[in-house]
Length: 163
Image 1 (cartoon, rainbow, N blue to C red):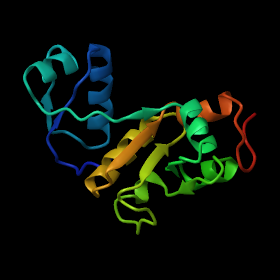
Image 2 (image 1 turned 180 degrees about the horizontal axis):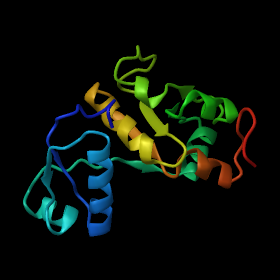
Image 3 (image 1 turned 90 degrees about the vertical axis):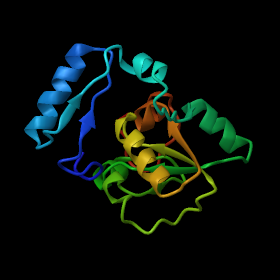
């Protein structure tokens, strides 16, 4: 969180599950985020019903990515996992920039090209996509399930993998 949201930033939590909100509050307070303003009853449905802004991230499955690569319409794949995860195995032809470096790194990517972002599963990818959008990248997608889904589907990886 600290590399994305400044400490002392006011936060609103959105979740349909009270237990998820309670766990998030505990974790946020534990690491120093204490300006928690509340949450909308009813989660995202309430947020949207009030006409508040919503941005959706397009999602690409690993099968869709493979098909795009086979059809020579391959988007650039950006792996935002940590260095050790990258070395343990990664998608062929992917570019690696740790998520924590996206805010300040020089980016070797065109802001107009399609980017498919992934991490181990999907959580860090969504944060990375937000950072890329703040830097005016226009066509950013989430790889559904991340590297784990790629491995589970049996697609080839570069370097050692868990399989």
